[in-house]
Length: 147
View (cartoon, rainbow, N blue to C red):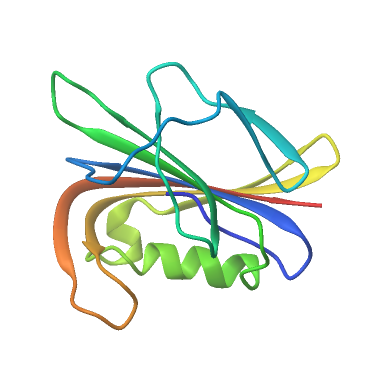
């Protein structure tokens, strides 16, 4: 999943590749907007209904052969400093940061600064402060786009 942000207005994208994703889906727009950015939903990707709150849009895809899945989540409200978000994401993995192949890259795309983050290993699924379920062979790709 992708989610990183600065105190300034920014967009957070989070994708998470898993062994399975279960969620209620609904017919979705082919195009949608999050913050100042416009997106097109790729063919084969399903729209996932989200409750009002932090998540602005969510998509998923399931590979029929492997039953592997990917989920992409879009946030548009400030969620704290970039590094704090990256640290929180990496902290959702059971292994130490060095063992999950944690990587951070800063790039500029047009007028926007983008922080890319990636990791893979055993993801600890669950709400903050709650019970966790260890999920092996998961990967995280995150991007924080700042104005």
